Image 1 (cartoon, rainbow, N blue to C red):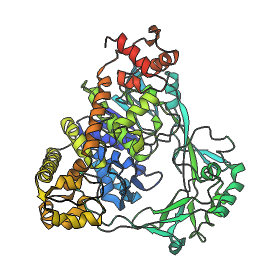
Image 2 (image 1 turned 45 degrees about the vertical axis):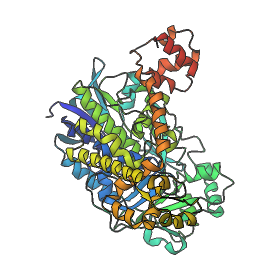
Image 3 (image 1 turned 60 degrees about the vertical axis):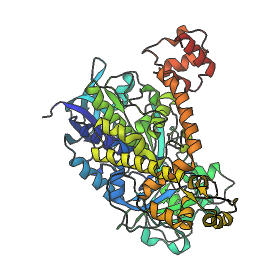
Image 4 (image 1 turned 180 degrees about the vertical axis):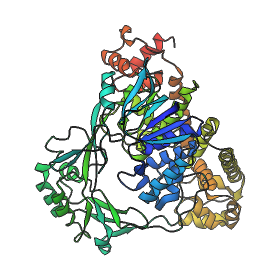
Length: 620
């Protein structure tokens, strides 16, 4: 009934979709197995993509040839560039999406991808022979052969949904849990754990009073995620902001004795940076209010997402409390919020390719690795799909370094440090964030995507144009001078020292008080010159000039620290025989099995002196 596939992807969430698309586009014969064909690329929680550091990840996925950025651009209803008041390393794109259109667009793109087949069934186990994954067994009792398997099970592995004192099996509201895989993997020697996440109630937007809330519109000139020719957003839907209050908090506290979080019925840890509303009230008892974002689920639906009110309290407590929020006095609820607890596998059991150390050609991506978020899942799926394809063909794997992308930071963090709570990406996790900006993801990663065969020739040419034109603009600023009488009025206005003679444009732009829009308004000739180029290319040149010293310093630091990653550690190296290493270092190194000295240096508990010992031992 089935041919032998090159790659079998289990699960059709954000990780599974990217894994299936990337491996199929590279030429592998791929089967995507999902429990429900109607929930492919479902936005299980908030209807949004991007955000702080997450937006950078979506841009990187797009630069490598993934689909998430394209789908987001085609289905977004609002776009905002966050942190615009800060430096460009912090700028992060975020889009509200139409939930139903998002899933429909993803499915359509997958169906139009050659080499990709679908099968609706639950995977209950893996077929393994001689320590290698050779296929999957389904709930219908079918054995499907494959040369590699990518597990992207999301929250479905032995998932339990909690609403107050009620609990029932499920991987998502109204969808059953997946069983069998965890038990088999544990039997094979894998370590598993439990994690928890949650979602807020969904409510009827027609029952809200928006006049009592702050409107949050999209950007005046909305940008995009994808570097391809996706459509520009011409109209937008606003979001709204309101707040909880002390009355809301008191009602929530009434339900604490029935909360699965506080009574110990939930064992897994939840996301630290996206806590439930009861957790916020409990942990931040000094706060008399918390922000609530009211986000539309799409262009035409009245369903609203109550961002900031994630909860697993009894539904009657949720309803009573939410009606005390300003603007929610007459709210009608579509469904209550809930918490979900599920199995994951500590990611220290993986290599940098996301292949498991115990079973060859078996890859994990997404929440099974302890991460949270669509974007974190998507980039892992993309990398697992690429590396599964390369493994089947016995070609060199694709590994992105920490100085090359947030994707590299995320994967290195996971497999080197592990996680016991849902891992979320932040700009602060990247030591080279000035290099890893959202505006230059194409420059950093499109050549890699093109070399693989995922990014087209046209994409690469556009990147080359961007680099060339940015360099041309920088040269113009270094060579062109402007007379004192033309520029001094602007300098006086901005409270910075005036000049007495003709001054190069670069020297003026380098001043902290001066930015490019100011110079363009003051100098018509400069404005005319820059008008011939895309804004994206001009922005690239401005950042390069404005932050030249910082960027150069970070490049040097990355190069220096990156040298440790050039020193390979042989497979199955016995760290216990080096008695001059600390006991903790020997234990941690033996568990993680780092592949380079650089990775070893990032393991918690391994000190610089331990690295020095390793360097001496390895003949540094």
